[in-house]
Length: 146
Image (cartoon, rainbow, N blue to C red; front, side, top):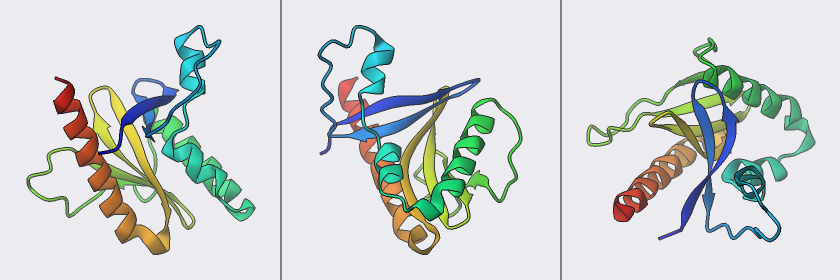
C-alpha cells in the first residue's frame, strides 16, 4: 500500500490539503512546519506540472473555486458539486471541481477536504474511480495508525 501524507494548500474556514503519495521530501534545514509543508509534493502539484499552457486559465479558476469553498463562499453548482453514484457503503462524500476540460477531485474530512486526483473531462470515469480508490486506501491507512 502506498504511504500517504497531507500537504496543506489553503487554510480558511475549512482547510484544503492535497494528498502526497510515497513522497520523500528533504527536510534538511526546514525548521518550521510551514517549511516542511512547502517541501512536500502532492498530487495537485504533479498534475499542474504536467498541464499544457492552454489550461493555465482553467487551473487558476479551479484554485479560485477552492479558495471560495475553503472560506464558505458560494461557487456555482456546475463548478463544484458532490459526486453521485457513490456506493451506499461509502459514507465519505467526494466532490468535483471543474473548469473547461479540467477536473479536480477531493473528499471530505473533518475540518476540510483532501484533493486526490486531477484529470480531464474525457477521463472522468477513470479519475472518479481513482479518487474513490485513493480515498479508501487513505482511510485504511488512518485506521491502521489508530
